[in-house]
Image (cartoon, rainbow, N blue to C red):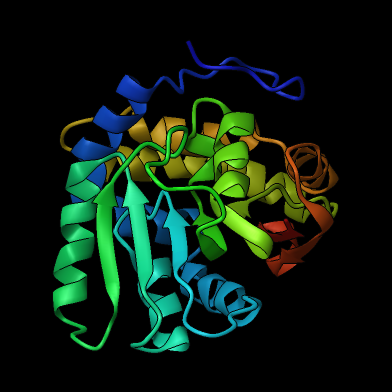
Length: 244
């Protein structure tokens, strides 16, 4: 059964079976979905995230909940071909799309692996950097997901989260909430052929997930220090960074 954050106002079904099936059905349109959620600036956010990574030498890097692989591939472009990057996700259909992208970038040293973020199949202290973009809020147990990211990160390594958040500026907050609650689900219904509920779940998952200081506190409680966060685009998304 999905765990519910204390800050949630509405219980959301984030069980593994429900989330995996949802992403299996929307995999061909997932990238478009992110463009809609981000007002088409998610690529810029990923680039900003990559620019903050503390990459040293050629020790491996892990991208959890990699989806269709955009962040893993962007990390590889910056780290170079000598640094192995692993992109893990528990949805095979999403990874298949990521693998197609990788084949179009032969210089990328990226391997995709099917794995649950709550039970990562890696030894302790293996990766110099562990990242997740737009995926932590979909993990059934947020704390378990963070604990696994910290476990596989080496001491002194970096854990970085890029996630949607909620703007707080007057006017923008109301406009964005209207877009999420009313416009986006309707757009999704026009695009979806299999699972229209996915286009309601995705914005709802943003509204029910902790952001800002609340998520930074969770990261610290799960083993990270020097945690900081940087809002992007007036708070529509946020980058969180912590050190093991």
